[in-house]
Length: 430
Image 1 (cartoon, one colour):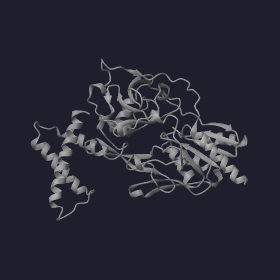
Image 2: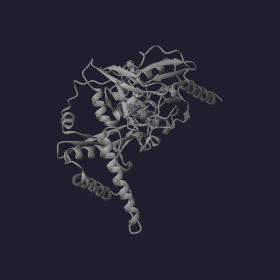
Image 3: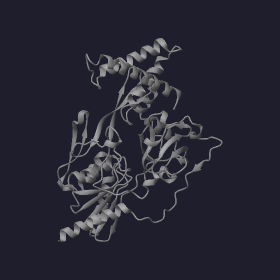
Image 4: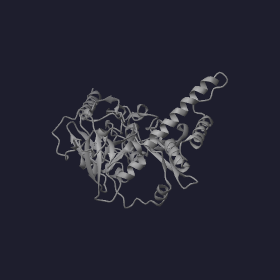
């Protein structure tokens, strides 16, 4: 953790402690609501006065202001952030056309850069990154010191250039992974038939235009005689809300499929099914896991809330937001989350913390690689330890091996889904 970050956190912590102690003395006369903005403003005013009057050197108030704004945004969610004037100009001008990334959906968990899921066939996927990996360093920059927005900017660069990542993974020493940046095309949907006239529909992306591809694959399954369908949306993150609604509509003929919500959970927009768009009305089971996020959660939630099918697997990640840029007087800005994606019942996928985010499967089945994921909340975050820093002479580096064909392992989640569909067939026959 950088000195600047430690200083600000220590100062704010001391001020809050003092404020709490003084508040206890006057609590008999008046109680301030915990979320009272006026009370919080008085705390910040007190902090600024101490910095201006008591700090050992003449403070650079522009830097203090920028640091305070970063901290304010940091306390909201991973996707809200402070932008410098240069970043605001680039954001408004769209100066990202020449930049490509590594092809992974990312978030922040416990202040660490977290891989929700690499896109199939992307540079991240080819380099061996996995769902649940923690990216501790991007080249020599610690991700705990920066915002998610800044981390993504560091990952972006010219096509063909390389970025070195230090990755934390459970049951493994820290890994050094080199990823060659490149544009990533969304992998097409896949379909196959299983015994018992069960069609398995694997959706790899909800990027623009993917719903039409999913529709074509589902039509192929129906032509092959599929009477039941397993929708595999494990490790599928990101994508378009409208594409997800269109996919859900292939299985649900009417009613609400999803919503967007604003402050206090107020519905902003409601997405309803088109009865003409449905293709399949038979039994359905969806497979989800910790890499299921955003648009994929729209499909999963619609199926379970409309009683169209069960969810098998592990709890999904919880994502799906939209941001708005608010430019400040100094030319800098705040990119704030103003909209959340929500299920048909209005429950936002991104909650106030991990425990309140995502979808819980109706039938929980642990994945085969559960032991290979690390819980960021268990990490110490002691970035100042020499042993935790990359490029140390005495450190034994472990490089992620090139992806190879994995030995056949029984897919327990798919097996359970097929069993559930078989039981449904038996019940209907009876």
